[in-house]
Length: 172
Length: 360
Ligand code: HEM
Ligand code: HEM
Image (cartoon, rainbow over all chains, first blue to last red; front, side, top):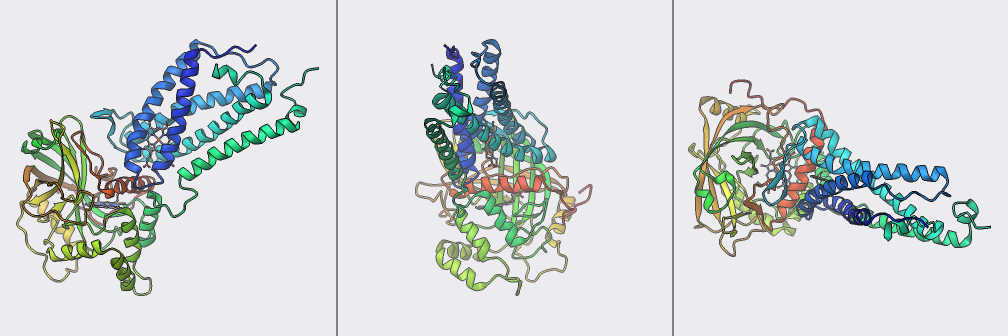
């Protein structure tokens, strides 16, 4: 009965789900190990920028191809929480890579991506800006992790307890 | 009538509760894996936070200052590349020509107000701003080898060297225990003691100590260590310590006021078998040395608002054409400098001990 998401939407969703979870783990791992730090940061930067590109594509796709509606029977409060959490996820998916890029700009770091290709700074080299953005990157990352957990919990509850076709709409 | 799947009655059915706990277990497992990855379950793991905490525990808290090499002064100048380095690396730093540099002279140690003295290691940090926009940052010391081989040894040595609050000096027994566990440090310290210090900042040789890989146009990577070799004549450090707590920096300020101070950048190319992963071990004599150009220090600025203040001289800020070797100190430095930088950028900085004034 419920329609499913278009193929492109599903592809973007699952690719990004894997990459974002990987980014969160890579980020947490790199600041917790001095020996792996440099190798992991070198993965973290380009992967984060790839996610920025993907979320831009995804937002355009989302605005063009509207998603299947939630089941009519779903209580309005639950619907509201669902929609709000999706926009929170979009916000964080944009904010994290932008803050990562911005904080390295404000910290006066060159931002190598792959080979000799560098990103230009998007903010001036500025002590006060760096001092705000670097902790913001951490706080937003942990907020993204919590939002992801809530999202996964809700998705599994749809699949196993509500059995209302919402989970299926993103798998096939 | 069909069961409302969103109702409280449905959610509290036994079957639903079992499934909901299954969901809970999945979420808790992922959160646990994340906590383990972040090191929250292994308080002994040496991360950047703990490393910088230890600097603060040993030296006290000095907001706004670098957690190591805390006493210093900024400089600006030029690097005139000879073009000879281009044989080893494609980095634009080595193209023939002149480029601006920003740098910093400092004393090793985490005390921003420490008195200059013959025992303190002196350092030069440098950012080359190459013509293609690429950056190379390096921080060098005036000792021939580094005392420790990896981050854990550095961390343990910091604790062993912590002054005893009763005597004001490190506990010799703790250092003995450390040296017994780290014969490589004992050997390195002997080499460091054997080489006389120079009389000032301007006539000291600053060494990379760590090894990086220089990659040439044919993608051949060679291990390289480098040094800044002074044009000023070497004069050994005189015995005794002058009363002026800033005598080394004051002499540097006077020297730069007098005329620009110069160094040659000398690249030393390692041979197969030369250690690349152990900065406590010197390379044998007779290695190929390449004169890559001349550094000219034109002016000094205090680091209260000089350009070097907001720079982290992370040894892995490298241009294309230079890459990390297997030296474990490199990644450790990169992580620790980042944490030191993050802390000090978030703090108001009191005035530095070294004030070159305007016009120097
Ligand atoms: C979806 C995107 C991203 C996620 C989920 C993410 C996540 C994280 C996490 C969890 C940390 C560890 C935070 C901590 O515990 O303090 C971190 C640190 C870091 N991130 Fe990201 N990040 C993202 C994008 C980026 C981008 C695009 C850049 C740069 C271009 C970047 C640069 C960094 C750097 C340099 C650090 C470590 C800084 C340090 O040594 O203190 N991140 N990130
Ligand atoms: C694991 C080993 C090491 C640790 C934990 C460590 C720690 C630090 C820290 C925290 C700073 C202050 C960074 C900042 O706030 O910008 C610093 C600066 C410095 N370190 Fe290290 N260091 C290590 C190894 C080395 C080695 C091998 C060298 C060899 C040349 C070195 C040379 C310097 C120099 C020259 C500076 C001063 C940079 C400046 O003037 O800004 N360090 N170190």
